[in-house]
Length: 171
Image (cartoon, rainbow, N blue to C red; front, side, top):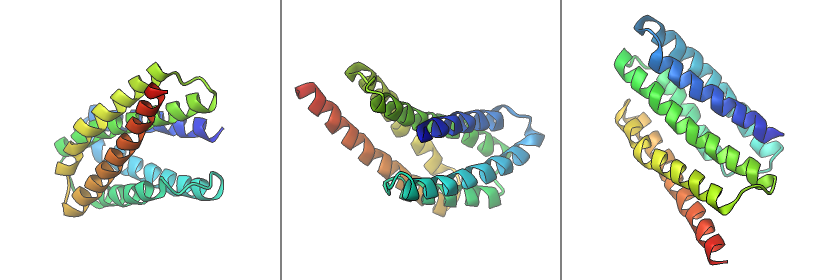
């Protein structure tokens, strides 16, 4: 049940990033601030859910760093062009989160085939390793370090996922 809520928010955030990217210049700041507030609220609530309902701590560091990034973005005075690029990159990165949640949904329903897992892995890896580094360039040093931290977590998760795929292939 909770995974469906996460998938809903993934697609809401994908849409939000695209709204920033496609909106008129005079609306970008308004949408940026609104999306930052919604995203921070989601991360806080999801941390509580992860700790108390799911009994998992794996995503908490990612969420805490995300809260800090969106707080800094909310307070920042980035130019419109940079914010629009951020919106597009946010949509792409959030798409990878949707892929992870879709994978979990399929796995829990015993519907995750090896081929589907490989396809999800390839999309996740390509987007995280090639789109995410552009976020490191945007913002001040604190945001860069935070984005680099999340990229490092992503590389670790890619490594773990690849080991699982190799294990499935061997068996």
